[in-house]
Length: 143
Image (cartoon, rainbow, N blue to C red; front, side, top):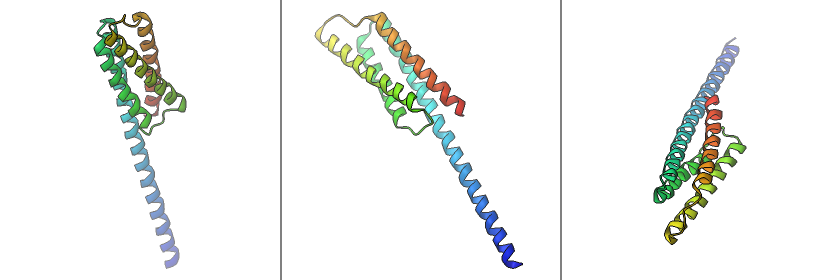
């Protein structure tokens, strides 16, 4: 009888320890999801600011905004999250396009040439904003 009782207690302890591990893992995953949502919000704000700078033809600020948004993209690509591979690919593509825009604008300003085509550039930023919103909604569903 004592052996059976000891076995039952050990089994309950193991089950409780597993439940505690599962709860801890779930809490950790939720915290990471909040980090991702916050970073997506930061990226969305950076893209909105980028759009305002393009409309105002403030090309130096455009380059700075590209850098800020690029930092968010890097953080999102490195943060562990439930983002799908497709979302990550889209975000990394945005990062590459931001770098290209910053180089193009910086080079244009430095040479004194005509700035980029504003409507076309704004269209690109609008597409990036949509992709960020899709990723935000996807991650938000997991919360």
